[in-house]
Image 1 (spheres, rainbow, N blue to C red):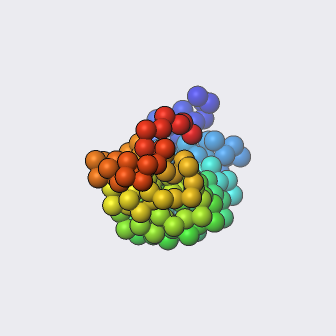
Image 2: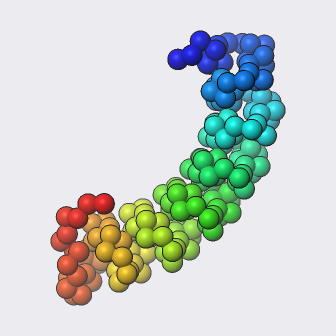
Length: 177
């Protein structure tokens, strides 16, 4: 670990405050991780998406409210993972599928219902993995083979019976992504 990042981790408030304007984004990101709410407030508009991502991960709901529409996909990705359901709701139609993937993973059932019709097969497959059997039933006839494989792999008895009634080859598939 860089000595200054170590200072940001274990140093006092005065040392961290001095490091907030350091030229190295890794040092400022360490301050965002280990610093106070007041320090995160001061760093929230930092030019570095690494710093803003650290704030999205280690900050509070107020910080993520401000970062939910950040220009950086890495920041929005962190908000989708560490945020609350209200913030994830705002990311349901994010242009980047990786952000929507995190909403499918960490979001609630209502958000997964919306994502069942996502354009990205990766997002729909994640709904099959993290969702419930009712949602998997919706995806049984998905156009994408990987989505159907995930439905078969993670579905309960009712889904398995439906797949066997369909004669779906993915019901017993061992295909990996």
